[in-house]
Length: 471
Image (tube, rainbow, N blue to C red; front, top):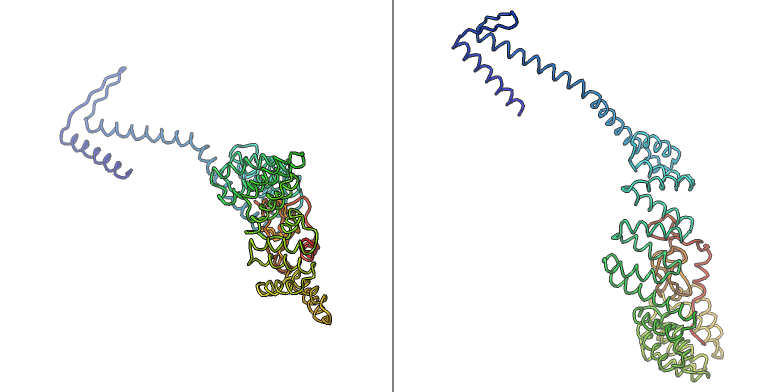
């Protein structure tokens, strides 16, 4: 475009000069005693030269005025390039595990990239790898000073609070970050888990409702979470002595948690305390259809007032009819038959349970019951010893297993004591001990660490003590 303008200007000058040459004339100028007498063509050339000199002077002065700004721009560009290179070297140092070099490069990048949050994040991570938590928090706190980096600072401080196991401070940072990014799914998970760890069930219910409304929590998970909150609120009402309110909350929790036996057993126990035995039995029977569990059998016997072994066997037979194909139904009836010395009935149900056991075969509980059965038969001590030996290497019985970290527990809990996850326990067969993963690092996000990690020996002990059905 500039070349076209230059060509047009040159063409105009040539045209003017040609016109002046074809039409000569005289120009006379008198001013302050001076007299200039020349041709029109010469005057035109002089005017053009004067304009060219004036334009050059204007360009020179403008260039001199703009030179400091251009110099600052070039210097800023060089600093930016050097700062980016320092950040890259710092990231490489972090990847190599050289936190000292990363800290040095972060300091250099912070000087070169004034106002950029990247060097602060790099410095914070380097300080964290060095174990300097105070410095790490200071760098993240600097990010809170500017609105555009406040979320980064809150996220970093949240991670540090989780590392130290301070749930109350972590919750404050998580709620602050969620106020800035309310549509973040991992923040909703983190806030919900922290509210559960601090037993603030009213706030947890609000978080679940908000997450469901924003569609950042799946409908099924929100429904299950509401059931867990209702169950915990029922527990609180029971501790206050308000059994009727506790039973109403427990009924709603059982309806929302058909896959968990604990809410159903709790509901039935509350109904028993209110002298509503028939309703308690119905609650257990309803839960047995979807989630047969040894605890449900124990509460069912309490509701049935069965005291004699034969009466207990008959009661559990009625309960098993609610889910006749479940392995737990056969185990419950077999154990009651063993206690009532109904050896044939016990052998029949144990045989069905063993045939229906998934690979690699019968669990420890079933093997121990078979050993007990064989030991009760005269002249079969070797068979009993064989079943005891088989029990030592048998797969574990179902227990509560965390879906996030595979931690096992003999009792259901709303929050995992190892990874801090909310509503992660399910009743299933755990993996073999050798297949269990190592505990998750406390800094994992959006996973939440517990204040104290479980010792390495806890998992094997839990596997070795599966819950037994009631005698």
